Length: 302
Image 1 (cartoon, one colour):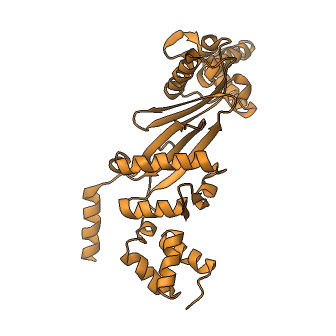
Image 2 (cartoon, helix red, strand yellow):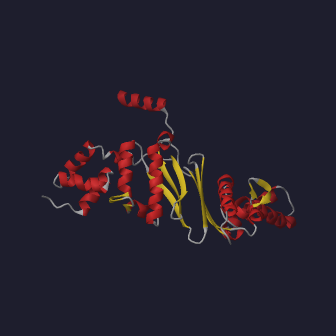
Image 3 (cartoon, one colour):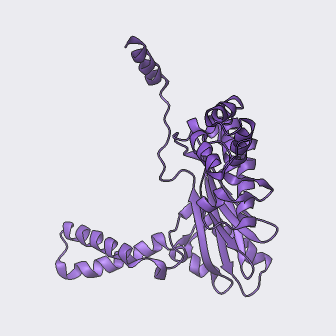
């Protein structure tokens, strides 16, 4: 019986994309023969994930939740098509991954992928993704997540349009009343709609402000404004910029005549928030059947 080393398992995993435990089992079954183990995994359908590794996965779901232990998580899990994203199997996968983050508190996605799954320590999260990719038939990937603890604060989560946008909010309050909880949820809805980038103006990086001033200054000069009043105009427009990007400065979506800061008053204070929008910044997959057929016909003619 050949000795199955961790290096051998790692190599098989890299070559097939199958889960760690499946790779180890294949090597044991094939007495350490790498080629036979690859064939074994292919026959079982467990090497399919490797073929899909290079595909674009920009669809999927953003899921946000505060669990019974008071831990809040927002996570983006991607797949290739909205058809798969709308299946119960994929939605359950997202919920399970969110609970794993809540329970196991990984520092980042790479650490999460290598952790034993919270509900089955015989498999890693990466193993589960490999199995899901093979059975569902599309590339599945965890893109990002955020985790908040709510020991001394109020947490709220909101998912918009079935997973297109997810929000996780942390706030503090002198007293956690039903009014405060309702206000937190209204604020989560506001964040989903208004897309602020920061909580308060003090959080805006100096580099952002310098860049904005540079652009606004050039705009004012292009408008033919005299140099002596450009500076005042720019500072006025910077105030408008704060109202666009800072949560507390924004007009409340349900009452645009009231700022978020005025709405909160002394009832609560926002600590932080995270807003994920599904697929933002990712290249989308575009299928062109006619082009695919033409390409295949061209290959056949050669």
